[in-house]
Length: 320
Image 1 (cartoon, rainbow, N blue to C red):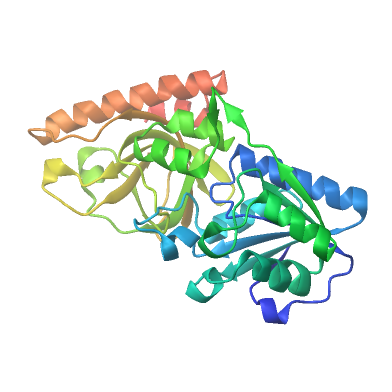
Image 2: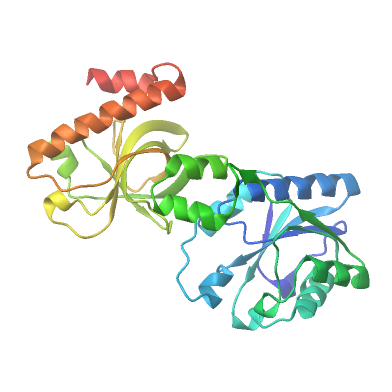
């Protein structure tokens, strides 16, 4: 997939362009529906499939409150590529860009820069200065400039429209399984393994400490899967400040079932499957150790049901 970052230095596309426009943060079920439609439509009409997305998120520039992104830009691009999209244009969103009127946005971006024949958007799409443009505006401009507009209806689950804002709320509340059902996969963060205080090892449960650029790291204790290179380790992950030891800095640490060796400086992806409990302060280390044992047992039961049979990592770790 070709990743483009300059509107004024775009290559000559081999075919006319079909473009899907949006932030696509999280690549949830609604985004997936749009991307599949884009790729299918491009193949049917012999067009070049392209996604136009923005960085930073417009709310980070224009919003009154700080928005936490579900994915890093790297994760978002990797996810888009999996759908077979041929190119992504990552447009820098700033005050100048936000000042474009809806007509200027269409004329400069869709028509002049991309020369798009077809435009695919979600049914709640708004664009241009102060979000003045809607689908009817886009369709009117499309008839004027010669491109077709395809609104894609939102995905509804359990009576709620699937949206990035809803998923952010669910993740912040620790409602991992509900968030995952809207994402269509497990929520994932990734980062580099860093040195920790080795308290887990002292307690008998050595942990992997992860430094992540992801903006949403839900607090609590979770059943997770950790991917290091091409190997997946079932795990229990704690995200919090370790109040038992009087610390304040947010930490992400995972106990990987069956892992042996040194993961220092390696890249790790953590997939969140279920929240076990909130983090809490224990009166002393023995009480914490007992709770960790309970967390691991609960994780084993959950994972055994998930895999429908005992995973080899669970058996290996149980013998240790």
